[in-house]
Amino acid sequence: MAGSLGPVSNLFSIVALAEPWKVVLQDGQILYFYEDSAWTLALNAVSLVLGVLANVSLLANFAGRVKYNLSQAISIGSFYVASVLLLAIIGAEYRTYLSMVGQGDDVQFSQGYWSAVITAVLYFLCGFVLTVNEIGHLRGYYPASFILTSSQRSLMIQILCIIVWLAGGGGVFARLQSYSYGDAVYYCDVTILTIGLGDLHPTRDLSRAIVLPYGLIGVLVLGLVVSNIGNLVISSSRERLALSRVERLRVRQLKRCDSDVTGRTNEDSFNLMREIHHSAKRIELWTLLAVRVVFFCIFWLVGALVFSRLEGWTYFDSVYFCSLCLLTIGYGDFVPTSPGSKSFFVLWSLMAVPLVTILISSLCETIIGSVVHLTNKLGDLTLKNISVPSTSDVSLVILRKMTNDLESRARSRPPPVLGTRTRILNDIDNDNNEVDKALLLINAIQGILVDLHAHRNKKYSYEEWNKLAHALDTQFDWLGADSPIRFPVDEPALLLRLYWNSLKEHLRNRRIT
Image (cartoon, rainbow, N blue to C red; front, side, top):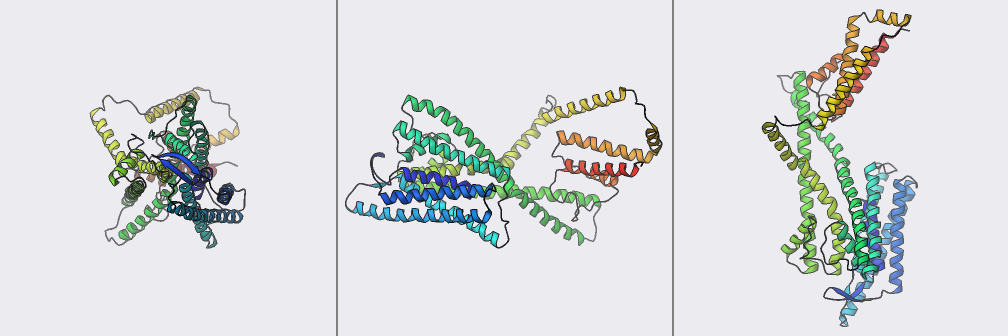
């Protein structure tokens, strides 16, 4: 969270420093700014430097370039101090604003001021989550390092790229279009998110020429962020939650079966373990969908409430506006006009992208996935006579053809002249039972290699697992703690390793020294 929100807070901090905090507006257009005092600019600049320092220290911690304790001290202290400095000058500027309003001046807070408010909140949030992590480390819950996956590292770099792209684009279009820096960042945000509200648009040929590659590159980088967020959310906590749920269901079923006087067969235990996995997956998918729908609705409706307050719209109009923005339609009949709503829109829209992505991924795995499965079944029933092989079927046919060609080519070669050692091996191979077992293992490995290529997610039947148990001269307790299907695993890879080890052990026992 801190690694993702830190660069976003730096973007708003740049807006707070680049744009004066008090402005005079007429019909939503800027007439002129009131210049900030020297001490306001100085403290604002110090806050930005501390915020950047906190993020650099945090990234260095993630990369292992700085010791954990030192980096944590720098990041947490810098985030808190930067937040306190901004809160101090926000309070002072608010008192100045009240004094000017009391004197009859027509003055409003600009996007610079509201960006400072957002920055102070984000800085404090980043410092808070790092403090929670540090407390967990001191209590022994977390190690003295951040162990990040490749998706997490990539996501932070991609978010940093988006923020740099927005900040740099804001500087370019502020100069070309004579926008304020806050308006320019708002314009770049609307462009990259493909909302296109139309309240700000390029009016010069040079601006139109620049916005085409700018928007294209921004959309591509945003697509990478969206894809990475989806993968990160799917893989971050799902695996651990799924394992925990499967284990609870397994223990519950094991106690129930132990108390059942009728007993159960080995195949019943296998089928029951399979059903536990299916039940756990269904519960997980629908629970995650419900949680994400609730969070999405809260985000959507609370955002509409904020826009209603800031813009003076009815609540229905605000919900309508948020819906169009979430769907990236952007008719332009409702657009944010006040500085506060524009600043909030930038933050809200950047948060909307991951939330919509997460919701869509859940819908694809549940409702949409069920509809697709149903249509595929109907298609198989009605169009089965004219269907063509799928990609996996074609790959399977090619793999089998290549295997047969190689085997026939090997059989057509003349047998090599073998020495005494070969004759000894031939004498040993006369033991038909040993040969049959070796052939059984080889044939099983050959079939699993095909599954690894064309059916990677295959779940093997009870008979196939029983054949493995026979080859290993063992027996599995399918509901027990040593069950090979106790947790979700890549079964083709697992069976391949077990068969391969069994073949090596068999050949090692038959080796002639």
